Picture 1 (cartoon, rainbow, N blue to C red):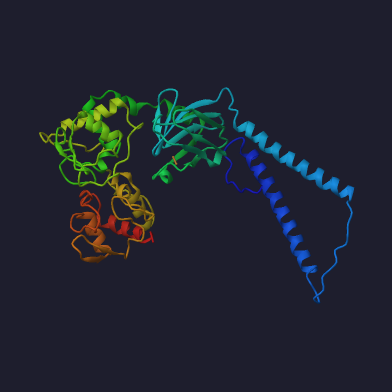
Picture 2: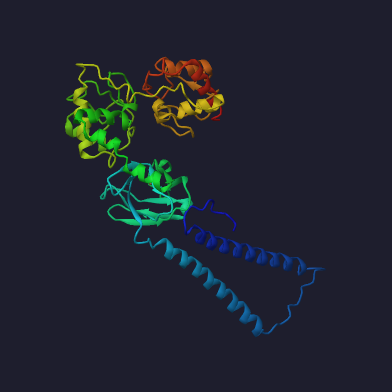
Length: 438
Ligand code: CUA
C-alpha cells in the first residue's frame, strides 16, 4: 500500500509490507489522535484569569471501558497474527527449493552451487523458483558475524562462524538487486556487498552449466594457474613482476629472499611464508610497506590455488620476461562508454583494469593513495615540502609519471602503466569526472 520498503521481489514481500504498513498506519493515527487531543485540551483548559478549574468527578463508564479494552486487544492480536503469518513463511523454505551455499568472510560473499560452480559477490538465481541459502561464516574458529540482507526479497539472517543458518525467497521478477551485509563486521563492512541477479529460467540454466572458465583453469600446470590467478585475483594491482614499486613488494626474484619485517624481525620468503601472507596478511608486514595494505584471501583461494601462486612466484626469477598480456593485461580504455566526458571519465576510473579505485577512495576515506573526493582544486603538500594545487596539468603528470610528485604521507607506489594506455583525451574525461567528486 504505502510502498515504504521499496520494490517487492519475492512472493512473501507483500505480506511483510502489509504488516509494516498496518503498524505504520496505526502508529500515525494513534500519535495524531493522542498528541492532537493533548494539545487541544492543553489549550482549552489552560489557566485563565488566574483561576484554577475544578475537575468534575467522573465515575466509570462500562461501555467505554469495554470498547477501549476489547478493540485495541483485537487490533494487537491481528497485528501479531500478521507478523506471525509472514514469519512462518520466511522461515519455511519449500522442500523443492534450490539450495545454494553462501559463505561470508572478511569481507566478501562467496556462493557455491550444487554442480560446483562458484562465484564471489554475485548471486545468480532463476526467477519463479524458490531458492534456499545455506549460510556460514569462515573461518569457523576465528570468523566474525555477518548478516545476509536482500532488501528486495524482504529477507535477512545472521551468518555465523561454525554454524549454518538459512534464508529463502522465491523471486517474482528478473533484474539486478543489491545485497548488503548488515552486521558490523570490521573495517570493510560497508563494502561487503553483493549483487543478486535474477535470470529467466533458460538463461539461468545456461549460466549454471557454463563451466568453460573452470575447465580452462583446471587443465593448467600449477605455475600457469598461478599466473592466471595473479591477474584474476588482483595480485597484479599491488605486486609487480619486473621489480618496480607498487603497493606491495615486487615478486621479481622474491622467492627465497630474506628481509626485515616492520617489527624488526627477519623473514625468509619460502612456501610457508607466502602461504601465511596470502591467508593472514595482517600477521607480518614487510618493512616499508603499508600495514593492513592487503586483504585476506582466506576462503577465496583453495589450497591448490595457493600452491599454484607459490609455484608461479618461483618462476618469476628474472630469467625470462613473463608475459601477462594479452589475456589478462589491463584492458585498453579507449572504448570507454558514455555520451558525456563525465560519463566516459567515470567509466575509465571504475574500469577494474585501470585499478584506480583499488587505491583511491571516492568517499574521502584513506586508502593507499589520496582520496578522489574533493581532489580537484585541493592543495596537496608534497613529500619534498612544496605545495601544489590539483589542476589538470598536475593530474595528468600524476597519472602518466606517478613518480614525479608524491603527496606527503603516501608511498611511491602508483604503477607507471598509464602512459600509452590512457590518451590525453581519456585523461580530460577523467578530470571532468574528478571535478564532480566534491
Ligand atoms: Cu560482513 Cu558486515
